[in-house]
Amino acid sequence: MSKVPEFDFLVSQKSVQQKRNLVIFKLNNFPRLLVGAGINLKQHPGMTAQKFYRWLDELIGDEPHTFQLRTIKPMLADLLCYVQSQDQPPGEAIPRNSDALLQAGTYALFNEGSADSPYCGSLGPPYEVLSLKEAWKSLEGLDNTMQVTEETYAAEGNSLIQSLAVEQKSQCFLTKRTGIPLLQVWIFPETMRWGHGGLAANTECWEILANLITIGVDLFPVWCANLISLDCNDPTGCRMVVFDELSKFELSDDTRKALEKQKKKVPFLIPQDPEIRKFWNMHFPWTLRVHVGGGDLTDDIDESELLNVVDDLDENNRNGDFRFGDSKFNPSGDYEHLGAMVKEVWMKGKQPNESKESGSGSVKGEERQGK
Image (cartoon, rainbow, N blue to C red; front, side, top):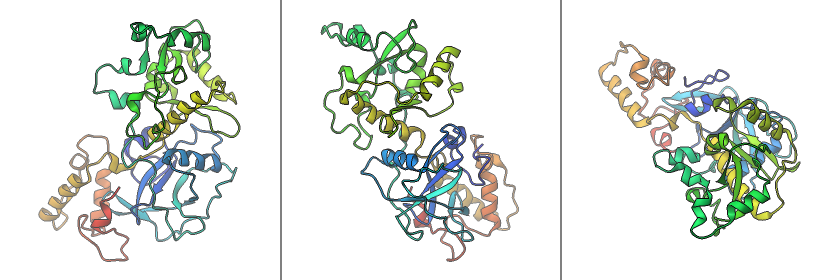
């Protein structure tokens, strides 16, 4: 599956698995549209425009921006390539301070005050940002990367664990449950400090109490998937945010109910220590980049290899007398609609790896390269 039911364009498996119904196209390779971000509004009920703008600002990681969301309609222009439909101009700008609920649909970012001026900046780092589990799955010792045990510091006589037990009253920081098996984890592991767009640039000391929390043992897979974080900058108070369906993990009913209860609490109880909030203010943008950023089909498909396949078809099947079997364009079996895209491009008389005449809605080869 490579298509979200609400939309008639193809996206990555990440977008499909998250069941995204709000998609943000980035325009830094205008006129080509590439999915730069998206969410499932059902997973984040009550998402206002103002809140989503703030999330985008944190995801990008720079100073607050002035770009504005406008609805757009994508159309297929070439192989793996969408552009803005010529039949439907961008919609009205959504004010950045609007408390109106965002509606499902397709959007793009434009510079303030003009539908003719696309925002060509980035939407976060120019690479896929991985969760802790994904980043370390090929290495041994994931538990040692994340967990902190008394034995870890016993040789040096470090008392972090004992101090944490007193600070958090031997309860799970996320669910507030007691009397369950617990372990300690870093909020933002030092091993993840690189490659996060400067999130950790001003941090020198990592192995401190402010960077530790205690969680239930059954929440460890959830934590390593960056599924949960704290939005400490919400103007209504600190909030727990769960970025995907908890049903994807084997959690007890008690744990799941406790998480749902804590999600609803505003503010979520967190010490006022600015050092603690500093680490959460690194963890939250990291988690936004993992779950909200990216999602374009080209994240999964090797575009050059597919173009070579189609070029071969061009050379050997000029009359178009061949079958668009999905197996030819979908060797992994995950992209059942890819063959239909190739057929649509072919039937429109397009040559996917060549420049086309202007006005046809296609994108020139050199404009297709960037992501």
